[in-house]
Length: 375
Image (cartoon, rainbow, N blue to C red; front, side, top):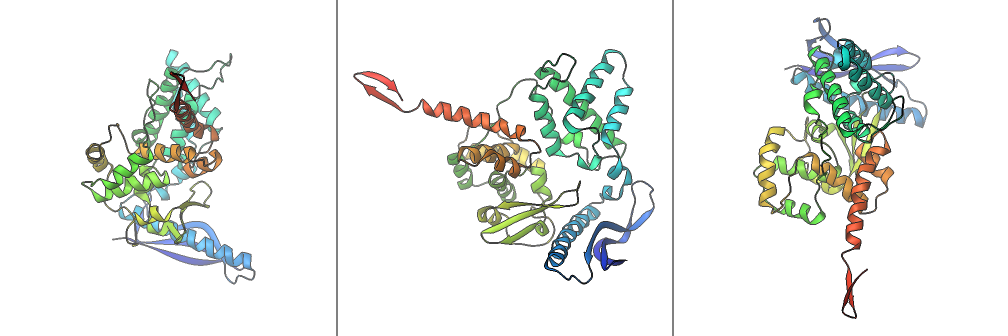
């Protein structure tokens, strides 16, 4: 089995570059050549002189170890996309444009508008590593907000949003086939439904019912409850490693590596959420978790808990967002906890909470002089 080791190399001016040594070497996905060194493009000070330099070294080494752990998992699973220059430097919008040029007639105009709406959301350049489930979900929500960027500024219909997002998904699938994406993102993300669908979620008492109900798979139960307490997606939970978990009781957090900037982002989690993870170890936290398990175990568990709702794993993220807002957490904080790029995406949950409050306002009633008087 290949082993990934963190190593150092002096680069001058009192600095030491950090790189990963992969042994035995693995094939580069672009050239096929066997590759051993993977430079991280980060450095530490050889002899830190100030408190700031010492802090820089500490945080950089933690970041490097997080990357090393992730690379170890990728190498073990024979996923070598992190070595691909095409994936790291390729422009998705340029590829989207090339897919458009393959069309003709009316279809060409539809693709032209699909590309235009994507650029209005993402800008003129998007590198392949920036594409993920979060990004795609936010783009879907952007289209559903019915923007109008055409000549007449008219808002687009839901069916038009469905069409434009389908072209985005088709382009993702094509990029994966050409080796430009490490995962088939076009297959993973959900399509936009032609009809406005209700975002299902659980109330506090229903969450308690779930927690009290035995589940056929302990790892599925722990992953679902962890999503409710943190708002993390299945993909985030499934790839979570012990090296990303930091802190002490009362101050636990997850340290994420942001691929685009190479910086670290911190997400606080509760002690209760941390306790769901089990005994600290090495590698992945939820070892052996498969989405297929959730598909057939979750409905049975929901039914046994006496809950009559159609729930998917993603509904637990909706539960987290809705209850946070319902319990008074401000929208900016919730948006940051969910990892939303745009506050408009989080506004979807505000609408849900507003409706719940309106409904609740009509539930308390008084009988005055024989008449039922609502408060």
